[in-house]
Amino acid sequence: MRDVIEAALKGAEADYVEIRLEETEHTFLWYRGRELEDIGRSTGVGGNVRALVKGGWGFVSFNFNGSPDLREKVSLAVAQARLVNGDDFRLAEAPPVVDIVPAHVLKDPRAVSLAEKKAVLDQYIEVIWGVPGIESSSIYYGDGRRRVTFASSLGSYIEQENVDVSLRLNAMARDGGEVQQAGVSLGSLGDFSFAESLHPQAREVAEKAVTMLKAPKVRGGDYTVVLDPVLAGVFIHEAFGHLSEADHVYQDQRMRDIMVLGRRFGGPHLNVVDGAAVPGLRGSYKYDDEGVPASRTYLIRDGVLVGRLHSRETAAKMGEGPTGNARAISYRFAPIVRMTNTFIEPREGTLQDIIADVKEGVYACNWYGGMTSMEQFTFSAGEAYMIRNGRVAESLRPVMLSGNLFTTLQNLDAVAGDLDMNQGGGCGKGGQSPLPVSNGSPHIRIRKCLVGGA
Image 1 (cartoon, helix red, strand yellow):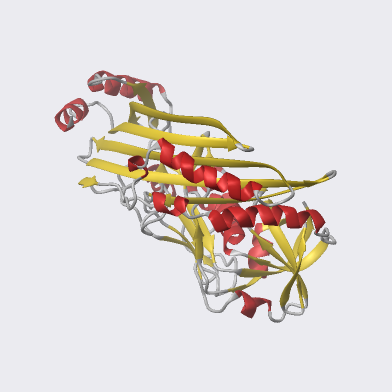
Image 2 (cartoon, rainbow, N blue to C red):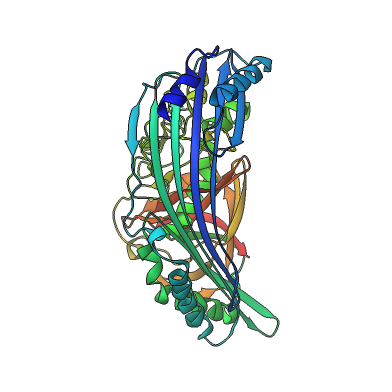
């Protein structure tokens, strides 16, 4: 196949051409209530060609059986690129790479039968429904394999494979007209074993949903808020990470005026990193979908904005270097700038250390949902507790946290040392969702954060 690909690229009348061929396998099980609602296994084979001519992109995607006519696809992509009246530019430099990258696999989910997977999930159904007060539940399990062959007119040829696993447990409790729910999302890069021993988590989810039925609502207002690693990770991903994706910055003059390298956004204790070169996580890989090596990119260092995430195109247009953050969820899409593993670096101390001097505050954990609009954010915590006189006190109904990102970062005055990465999420952007990512943080403390009932 390599000879066929390189022959199709040879002589193409374009500034740049790349070919991406992809094989996928996917397995899923979905429970609603006690019943198995859906189960399936699918495979797919497809590819795409992307061509650049004088700043205009042409893109062709296709399914195929056997050997596709790649020379025809290249010609069509080049012809499309010639029709686009783009801003003439050259892609940022990226040395050609030739490599074969096997999947990171510990316990391979492909070696576990559907019957075995179902038997494991059946146990979690029984655990959840064994807690009095549970009204409903849902469980989703999915695993997938993706093998990509990438080649470019610059001489790159990369074969890369990854295996992804994800699982979500959710329980809903009811007492008359009162309804509350709790959930947990988990995942791994190529290791099924984490999904086999979640009985404590399944019981905890159910018990939390029941407990919240009797919990009081928070009195709305400004509080000192402490976020657990899960919610803090979601916060830094959603509220700050997306603003660090260079296509957002380049396309919006207002954001270019705000997201100026060298600007201070927080105290010297704040460091924010994104990088697929961080090993063993769901957002990890060796090369992105443009064949650029993965990196570990500081976005904020010592409170100062020092970097952003790039594709080769955005790096060229902004006069910066590519970071290996061009990703596509499948061959049906061209790669765009995406996060990988995004987190706040740990400092020192524990949860108890950063709540010790809090007279009255809120401890917000886990995540349920939220939205961002540029620098404004609203997040719903999956669970919450009052902090009273330096101690975590009574449970609360789920709370909502709202504010301005940049004000909140300035008010973020303490970062603990207990970094934990959440691998249960998926990121959406440009119609491409859910892209495997991970995010995380130690416990963090934010002074004067607006809190309301969810």
